[in-house]
Image (tube, rainbow, N blue to C red):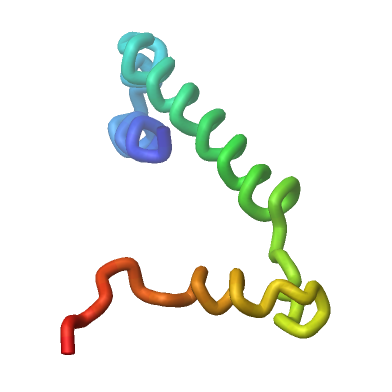
Length: 74
């Protein structure tokens, strides 16, 4: 969208935006999805506080979650 606006303003011809509705529509759709993802990331699912292992009593489960998936053979 920004490229369309810059190109049209430099050429002093705004038909670049109105004359290519597919490109304009795709850029608007992509902006909408970007805004949705940003809202999800920063607003809806913001930073999560980590609980200490001692608080929930599941020490062994948490230790196993941190183990590598592929263990080295010694």
